[in-house]
Length: 340
Image (cartoon, rainbow, N blue to C red):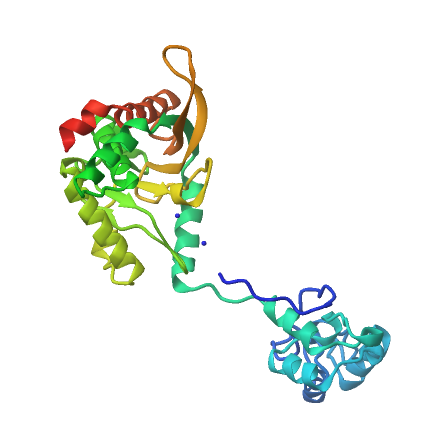
């Protein structure tokens, strides 16, 4: 359901992860003069042993002694690099110089700034929280099958001659929606010691964005005609990419499809969304030598799907039957003829 590369400075030496400088509140008592001195010299006060009074207060002398003992005076830094280091509250002792004689250059400091921890976006925080919760609460297990996409490929080609364009994703969504009606445990949710079986197939379609992932929901997907399903998936994906999805658009899902088939992926496993009991990971259709029913070696477009399912509700045999039901539908040319 992933940023533009940044050019690295030429001949820059590896830079250790920078520690926060004195601007961060110290955990031990610090004299005002020591704090000002440490800030001026870009020193992390938490690393300075304190000798003042009974509580080990850090004094200005302690900071100066620390500078001398730590080899600070041997550090060389360009004025421009020093300014940027101060602006970003870097600790000077954490920086390695790649310039002549080990001098710390602007490029070195920029490398260190680039490695400073940065807060996640609101979307990333939500994704992290929900999926961490899912993996912690739900015991996932996985079932994979390979599907011959010849029937879908032929049907799409026939439709194209009629100026009808329906993506592979729509065929997959329809096959999954129909299979979910046959396997109520996979269209369900575990709440404590109880299982809620959803009466409607509300299919989540994961949409990848530059800054994260959203899952708009197609309601009653099993009841929709293929062209209707295609229109709604396209509409919801468009709203997702333009940032126009509403909370209602993303609520009430009963099962999710994560399709990375367009990204040249052979196989992957997805994490179940909270409130559901399964998710289907769809990989690329790859030309593959296979043995047909007559024993001949032929090349077919083979696509792997992997079901991630909540073991509290679903056992292995049921998961296997489900993915094979999806496989059977996608490989059934007569089914697609009847649905168009």
